Amino acid sequence: MSRADELYKATCLDILNNGFSDAHLEVRPHWEDGTPAHTIKKFGVVNRYNLAEEFPIMTLRRTYWKSAVDELLWIWQKKSNRICDLGSHVWDEWAGEDGTIGKAYGYQLGIKHQYKEGMFDQVDRVLYDLKHNPASRRILTNIYNFEDLHEMNLYPCAYSMTFNVTGNTLNAILNQRSQDMLTANNWNVVQYAVLTHMMAQVSGLKVGELVHVIADCHIYDRHIPAVKAMLEKEGYDAPKFSMDESITDFYAFTKDSFKLENYQYHPFDFEIPMAI
Image (cartoon, rainbow, N blue to C red):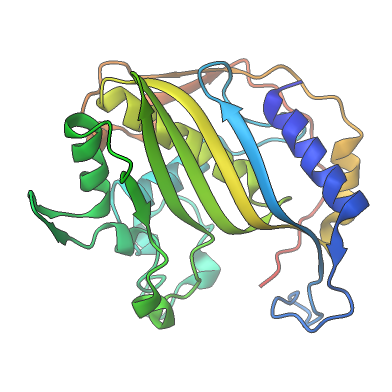
């Protein structure tokens, strides 16, 4: 069983056995039929993944990791908010009439800011500091821009990455305000594991830990049967992750720059309703 499977099982079991149910409260999310989408949640979940030992993809069901990487590159490389720039349809329901998701995600990363060394957007500032100021404790991004929240079609869920170099090893913390465990957990873990690998390689560093901090970690009421079915499965070993080692420019990566060998996963026979 992969380490990602182990952590996923432990987190979901903790939520189901010890979590707080908001079934008695009024909630914002709802199902397509208008019914309130209630959750069981745990506050302040922290999971650690050693990327040097294993790639953190679950095998209890398939994670469409190529699509996850494509979305990551859309946000961090293209710094785009236009869904036409994205290969998948995961953002279609959040698109406005102008074809964008508003001033969210990639839009925020692409805004240039004045530093004493010159003008940088958030991604380029991280790349600069990893090469020139690796001992810095200020290497981070934050896309939860309060000034622009009213123009975002969805407030950022995964909103901050903090990078920290220890010796010649790059570690990272992903901060997430809200996490839907069934639909998004491993998707986000895979994305930011790949991002950490990318940042390490182009900065001449070794990859270390990804720490995932989740404020509101929840399972939706209509997702509980699917989650319980997954928990009954025994996972497979983690596949082997590799990337094109010749790439030294962050912006030269494509989704085809990454490979997983021997990725085995269990079939998943549930239709997943989406809370909106």
